[in-house]
Length: 203
Image (cartoon, rainbow, N blue to C red; front, top):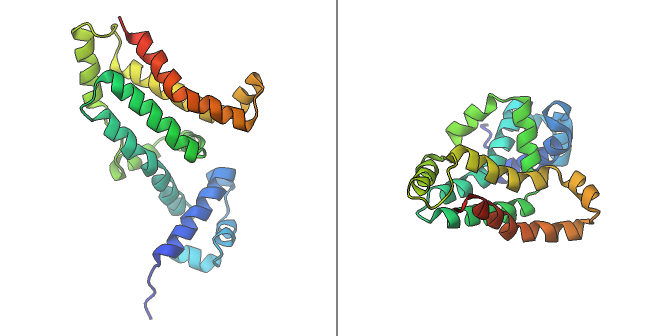
């Protein structure tokens, strides 16, 4: 009798695997632990995913696909550069506050296997900054903003948005704030970061 994969079971597996991979990384994760957390046996887990690598890739793609299309849409809409910076910052911070595991998870595993990004680029709505680059260059040419490369501006936007999440324990220690106050700081950054970047590039 032919087995059929069930979407609900697969979702249970991916959620369980995400938690284990997040806590222990690719190398520290064990298939048995993932099966236990998903409330299935190991044989069933292997039926859905033949190896830990294939399971990890599925979890990673799902995680990255949550944020990538949103960022891509903002970078390629027809809004002004100023609005684009505001929307990018507001959407990114708001989204990651709901999914705080994502930045560390993605950065940790890309550092472990840098070539894996090639697979991600081919399978999800990977952000494309070509339109953003043209927009920045045009604003520089007409004198709306200071001379800056789109790549440098994009790195600045990413860095200011991502760092508070990947370094939250360090920042909490430096600023001596609890989790509740830190969430308030992050909420305020939706406007503060955008204003900081816009003021930095304005003539």
